[in-house]
Each structure stands twice: as C-alpha cells, then as structure tokens.
Image 1 (cartoon, rainbow, N blue to C red):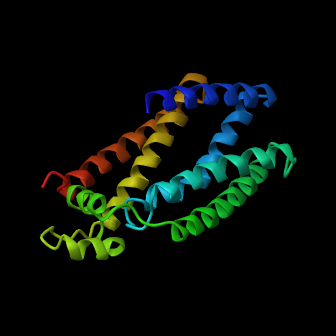
Image 2: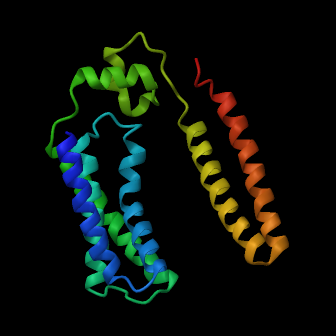
Length: 203
C-alpha cells in the first residue's frame, strides 16, 4: 500500500505538471477543478444515502470526470472563458460522468455485507436508500433526517461562498458589500449550528 501510494503520488505530480504547462491562467485551472468537481459531486453525496454505491462507482466517476474535463479543453468545446461556456462544460461533464458511474455501479457488485452493516450501524443514514441493510440491522433506530441534512448542506455551502466573496470585497472593494456578505455568512453559520444541534447526531 505504501509503495502504491508513492507511485500514485509521483504520477499525480507528473500529470499536474503537464496540465499546468498547458494552462494559460490560474483561473483556467480553477475552472477545470470546478468542472471535475461537478461531475463527481453526485456520487460523493449519494454514497451516504444509497447502499448500492461501491468503490468502483467512485473510481469510475473520478476517472470519467477528469477525462471529460481535460478532453473538452483539448477539443476546444465552448473554448471562451465566459460563464455560459463554463456552465455548458460542467453540465456535459456531470451528465456523462453520472451515466458512467451508474452503469459501473449496476455492473459491479455491492460492498461486502458486513461492511455495509457496520457502516449503517455507525452512521445511521436515511433509511430510504438503505432498506435492505436496515432489514439486517433491525435493532438500529431508523433515521428520517434527509431534509435536515440537505438544509445543513445548503447552509454550509452558502456560508463558505459568502465568506470567500465577502473577504475578497473587504480586501479589494467595495468594502461595505464585503461586510454585508460576511454578515450573511455569519447568519448562515448560526443557522447551521442551530440545525446541527437539533439533529441529535451524538445520540
């Protein structure tokens, strides 16, 4: 495992250097990161809510998202730097990646039952996507907190982005707009804390 991790690290450094040499700006690099992240976001989120997702689902999602992001760049698909073109590429990457990881998920077997049961007992995810495992671990109280978790997710995302843009405006202007965004971020942080307190995750 250690040798494999070292080899992968070396390959990642080489691949990163090659990609960086082809980029024309830091902003272009961030756009690739956003497009790749958009493609893998669904499987990373759904793995908590659907027992059928396995390691191959995530590997295929990461691989296809990266290949699609770089491929669209090299083929000049919507090549301008406009927000519309970036959104078009992100949507295409997300669509193709979703199809790939769903096909791989159904083409491969689930994780071993003992691992799924252990995960279910420890995490207690929303029962909707875990009913086959919940039937095995029937002693575990059923969770119905999907709505509350999604609210926490939205609040967390808004909090982080408002803080980032707010800090940028405070440093670079306009100052009061930055203060307003930071205030909104603080309000989201308070709401997120309150929502987590009501979730009883420590039970």
